[in-house]
Length: 267
Ligand SMILES: [Zn+2]
Image (cartoon, rainbow, N blue to C red; front, side, top):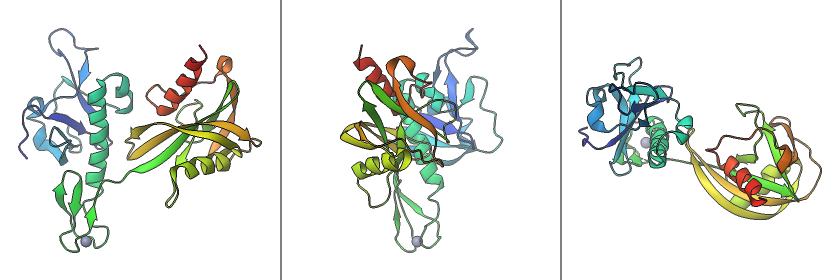
């Protein structure tokens, strides 16, 4: 595939770390330079070593996996975790990298027809078709809900077993097949915490490409019930005032945006 020079190029290692370039490398700013997503022209010698390559956003970006063990990309490049790049890359570049991560995951996992096992053909950037049985495959999302529950001047926070650090977050869970979004919120809250909520309001959403999530954020008020934790999911939970908040999720998450908005609302 011949790429135009200006195409944004999001290459990942086989464990989905991102290749970024460091600005002004070699003219004195060898460490701590600004990181950015490279363009195809900067990676001409690297592109032949890319597997599962595919274009994204109408051809304005390209993504793929560096072949196993390939590290000859040059000292002006760095391999980094994608998630912390939220506060490092420009926001539009970060959004492109997230989309690339998600599309690459789809590209790798849709090589064969799930119905008959034959290798699929690419119809468009975001569509494939089985040449034998005609089955069509599109990138699928896994939507999840997350909700900020307040009770007077307190917010309800939980610590889930799958959190990487010791921070507290909001009740969240995947929407089940055949379920409406709002039913999923009521069900998750009830199942995980034993609480009932009211005044459910949509807040906003966030793509979560680890690997194919979409977080739908809500606010609600405590209506009733005693805290009874689902022990397979949660370690602990409780209502917290603004003056005694526990460690919170990192800034990039919609959970943190929901909590910060509540904290700021009082100032
Ligand atoms: Zn098929």
